[in-house]
Length: 127
Image (cartoon, rainbow, N blue to C red; front, top):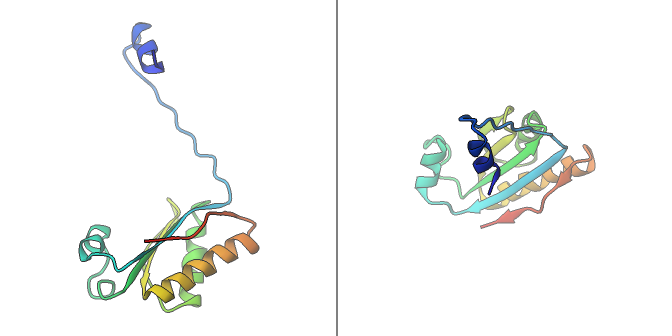
């Protein structure tokens, strides 16, 4: 019997779920998508005039979420990339560029987060 069954059998007809976010200083995803299909650009809502002719998409998630602003700045200063999406509320950054420029930007972000900000940083992955 799981917790939902136990609550329902106890006579209560409502299930209350409480979710907590305990932000750490971390980059939880750093991934590079080389040669993505055009449909992926469209589904992400990226600008076709800027992003569709790019060779790769980089996606990074981090907490605290506001760090996405710093990461976007580092990406733009370290390499010739375009910002696809920056969300200071979820901690998500999406960038586009050539594979080498995207890799350079993602490495620069991860290195800065680890060395200067003391973040726990995941491995950079690529497909």
